[in-house]
Amino acid sequence: QLQLVESGGGLVETGGSLRLACEASGSTIGSTFSGYVMGWFRQADEKSREFVAAISGSGSRIRYADSVQGRATISRDNTKNTVYLQMNRLKPEDTAVYYCAGYFDTWTFAMASIARKYSDWGQGTQVTVSS
Image (cartoon, rainbow, N blue to C red; front, top):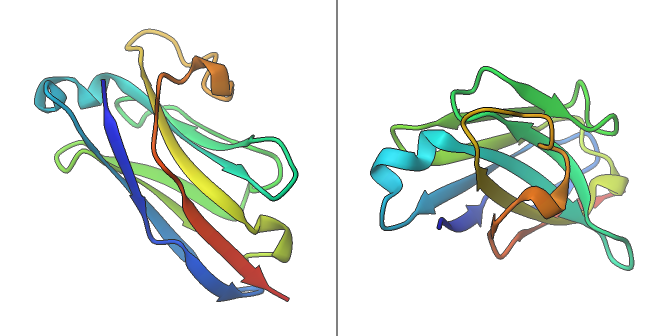
């Protein structure tokens, strides 16, 4: 099981950028982080949680939500047990709590946009985009 801690959220003006980070830890983290599919989700006030981006364990497969395609870049550094989300050209509608999540799967990536697939979740970091 992973323990996930997000950082990098904050207040930014429309059109600005943020880089979120999610550091993972756990009793077997040294040998298994690269086996985890990692994703970012977000939840705005009075809205359901939605998928933002996901990356496979090796980093070779990536998926984005249509709402952030072209503005977001997900990446990971398995030597640091960390996954990142770079968000550019931010809009007020990007305002939300951003959650990092992961599940162990070295075989498929098909379910990477499905929240219920993820077994481990961070506490979230607030991103607020002012208009």
